[in-house]
Length: 452
Image (tube, rainbow, N blue to C red):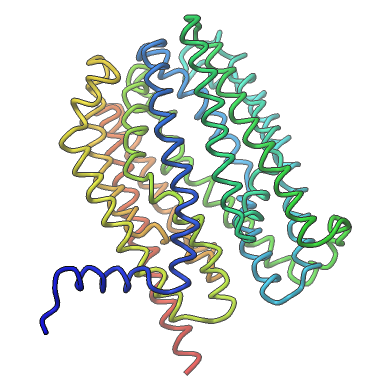
C-alpha cells in the first residue's frame, strides 16, 4: 500500500524526534525556548517603550553602556559554565562526586575573583567609554553605575553550568522569565512617569541583578542536594593531576571570548565609536530584531552541550553524529521560515512599532540574516569541539577572523557605517562556522576509526 502524506509526516517526525537522546535535547531546549520566547516578547514590548521614550541617539547611548559592561565582563570571563559542564559532567559519569564538587567549587571561586577584576576595569575605563563610545564624558558615572551588575554576576556562569548538567532547565527558564517580567514592569513605570536614560539604566540593572542572584542561590541548593551539606569542603587539590588540562581549557575559552569582542560581541561599540550614537541606535535595533531568527535556536547549544559531553565521555561517536545532524535539520527549518517572515514583514513592523524614524535599521537586518541563517544551522560548531576537548581550535579560528575583521572595521565601517558592520558580522559567521564544522567531522572520523 502506498504511503499517505500523513504516514510520511509521521515517519519524518519519528526520525527527527524518535529517540531518547534527541528527546532530552528537545525537552531541555523547549524549556529554554519557552523562556526565551516569553522573554523576547516582553523584551520587544520593553524596547518599544524605551525607543519611544529615548529616541535614536539616547537609545544608541543606552546600547553603548550595556554593551561596554558586557564586553569588559567577557574580557575577564573564563566561561566557567562550559568548564563546569565539561568536567562536572565527566566526573559525574565516572561516579566521582567529590571531584565533581571540587570542579564546581574552583570554578565559583575563580569566577568571583574575575567579577571583582571586571568591575575594577569598568571603573578604570569608564571615562574612555563615555568619551569615545557614548561621545559624552558626562555619562561616565552611568558606565560605572551599570557596571555594578558584574558584581551581582559573581557566580552566574558556574551556576548555569551546574543547573544544566543536572538537568534543571526549568529553573533557568523560570529565572529568565522572572527577570524579564521584573524589567518590563519597571520600564513601564519609568515610561508612565516620563523618565529618562538614568532611570532606564537603573531598571536594566535591577533586572540583571535579580536574575543573577536567583541563579546562584538555586545552584547552591542543587549542589547540596547532589553532594551533601559539606560539598564545599571538597579540596581543590584533588584536581592537581588535571590542573594543566583544566587551565588550558579555561584559558582557551577565555581567549575565544576575548577575540569575539572583536568578531561579534563588540559590534555596537565599534559602530558608535566610528559613526556616532545615531548609527549605533539603528544598528542596535537591527541586532535586536535579528535575535528573532535566533530565538528557538539560541537555547540549543545550552541543551546540546551537556548531552554531547556525556556521549563523548562514553565514546558513543554514532550518537554524537546523530545529535549534530538532527540538530542542524531542526535549526535550519526554523531559521529559514523566520528569515522569510522578517524579509517580508520586517519593514512594516519597524515603522509601526518603533516609528518610521528607525526604518534605516531594515537594510542592516537583511544583511545580518544571511550570516545568522548559516550560523544557526550549525549552531553546534563550537560546543562540539569543546566536547571533544579541542577548545583551542575555535580560539585559533577566531584569532584569524579577528585580524581580518579588524582590517574590515577600520576600512569598511567608516565608509559604509552600520551596514558595513552588519556585512562584516555575517562574513565572520560564514568564515568561522565553516572551519569549525569541518574540524568537528574530521575529528569524529578519526576517533571512530580508532575504535575499530
